[in-house]
Length: 255
Image 1 (cartoon, helix red, strand yellow):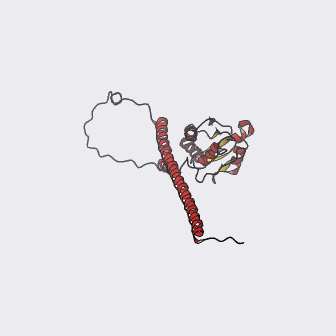
Image 2 (image 1 turned 90 degrees about the vertical axis):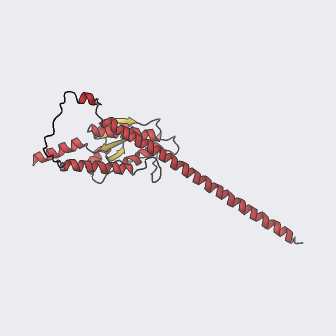
Image 3 (image 1 turned 45 degrees about the horizontal axis):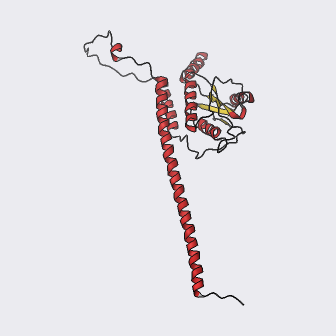
């Protein structure tokens, strides 16, 4: 005999289904709110990290370029006051090469200002044992091939083991700035494979991400086994301003 349902039973079933749907909607809403809160928290952390980075960059530039402070009194010792001689003064027009250098430096700084170094948005995660490689369009393939083969001996290196992402960036940036100032062309970054990090190869992926966006970098490639293999990277840098000027003078002298 077929079982019959009364109107009351039907209403109970309908009510139970509606309650179940409302519970699911409420749970989805809670998950959406939690995701939004997490995104907001990440944005706040990125903003704090960016501010700390700006303070670090500012301090680094000052420490690299500021001359030893001398008191105003010491600087003015032996200086005699001159009377106004009414001679008209003229402003010297900036040398063309100097103007180009300043413009180049300003453009490079703007490129860095537009970067978000600590966000994983748009970042490609690499494999722990995988190779990372990149060259700018202007870099000759023959030069890049020598870099890949380890024919350029690293002139300095930086070890990022046991570093946080933020401290790793600071040490990479500091090493590159100092290398450029000393006219070094090839450096070695030891980042490790990241086999046990979460996600895997996190720091290695960040290094590849940063280097592509640094205006001083011409190219990079995973190091040879005797320099650390997949756990290290060769980086080829642009010439410093002084070295580029010397090259121009050498070319001009040959003509």
